[in-house]
Structure formats: C-alpha cells, structure tokens
Image 1 (tube, rainbow, N blue to C red):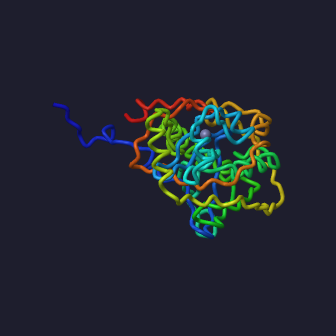
Image 2 (cartoon, protein in one colour):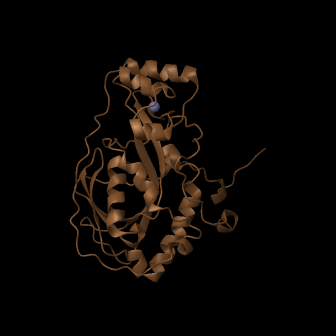
Image 3 (cartoon, rainbow, N blue to C red):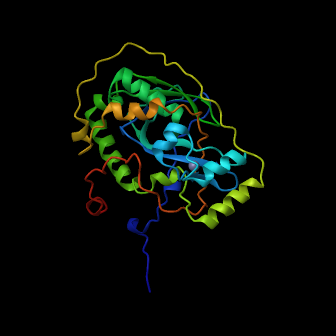
Length: 300
Ligand SMILES: [Zn+2]
C-alpha cells in the first residue's frame, strides 16, 4: 500500500493555484520584468469552454489574423459570435515588490513572484519601453491599474531597478526567480488556454458555443503615454551570469513580430482551474532554458 507522509515532497502542485499578477482599479504596483522573451499563443475565446489555442500557423496568424486552412476555430469565428478570432496572448513570470497603495516600496524590501498573462497591448508597451530605455531588467516599472476587469494598465519606466541597488535583495530575487522559473516553466503555458485537436471534441465545443449568445467584450486598446522622468544610468549588470545562462534575444527579432500585430487587447481570464488541461504544445517563442537549479538539492 502506498503511503504519503506530511512531507513537503508529497505536496501536490497546480499552476492554477499560483496567484496571477492582478491589480485593482487605481492600485499602483512596482514591478520587474526579468524575462526577455515570453511564452506566446494565439487563442480563441470559446463560449462555454474557455480559451482554446488556435491551430493556425503562428506566422500566418501574425500576418493575416486568421488561418482558415489549418484552424477550424478561425473558420467558426467568422460564423459565430460566441467564438472570438484568434488573438495573441503572452505569459511570463515577473517580480512584484511589496509596496503601499501608492506604489512606494516597503522596507525592509520584500517581493512576490507571479505569472503575468497579457495581450498585445502590454507586449507592445513593453517593447516600446525597451526600445526607449534599453534593458528592462535594469529598470523597475511603475504600474497603475486604470481598468480592473480587463487589467488596463498605465506603465511608467523608472530610472532605476531596486534589485540592482541592494546586493542582498538582488541575490534573493535571483534565487527565488530561478526556483520559480524551474517550478513553473513546464506548466505556465496552461494559464493561456489549452490545445484541442481531436475533431469530435472541436465539433462539440463549437456546437456548444454556437448555442450561446454572450461573448466577452474585448475592450479596445487604450493608448497610454508614459510620463517619463529623467533617464538614470544604471550600472552595467551581467544578467546572464546573475540568472545562470540566460541567453540574450536580439531586439530586432521581437520588433519584426510586433510591428505587424495590431489587435485589440484580450481579456485576461485564465483557463478555469476545473477544466481538464491538455499537454501544452511546443513553444513557438520558447522560454529561456531554465536555470541550473537542482531540485533534488533544493528540496533536501
Ligand atoms: Zn484559429
């Protein structure tokens, strides 16, 4: 007979139990985006089912917004309001410093690491900020929530990143981040939706959606101009070394993909925790290789 002791190694784990980065209206947060590339999927909102990954080719979707020969949901979206067009969504881990409600960092410093799901509007905003300010790992972002339901943000780049100014905090964040990355990397894509390829199941969910009428209101993208303060010069930091083997991503690769994407923001509703989740498909924009954290050692 198998037995399970009250032992940390016996703890069950679900990515859906990990709190997402979410804000209330008018709340401010100070955050740090450490990844330089994110998990990405085109996904359809299907009434009664939730988010389902588009089966279309990524480049075709990016260029034309639909891939009728390869994705039955792209076809169905033309016919039924209860199925949205494929829209791009991203997920990454990020660091949120603990602050007061005005976004001022509490001391002694503390932080949380959350998965963050967002759409093209925030991706483009992050890209614009990276182009203007350089490496975002050297800058904190001050975020203010302007709309809670669709997590509308105003994001301002700050001249400095707290974690680079405090050696102890830097070590703590790097270590915690590496551990979270290792723990969540396998499942984080599930937060975006699920892959359904079986024809009978696809027919079933399309028929299910076609019988319903309500569809989420995809808010149009709000143009938010950042209020930039003077640029501060951050000390050069070897991020690759800090995070153990983090490859740099050429900026132009991201820029090319984003230039053609002008879709409205996507409501950021995670897949219901109760929904059966299939194995995630291979990443089209792969997350960086996990750090060299050895969990056998870590859990000892
Ligand atoms: Zn599709």
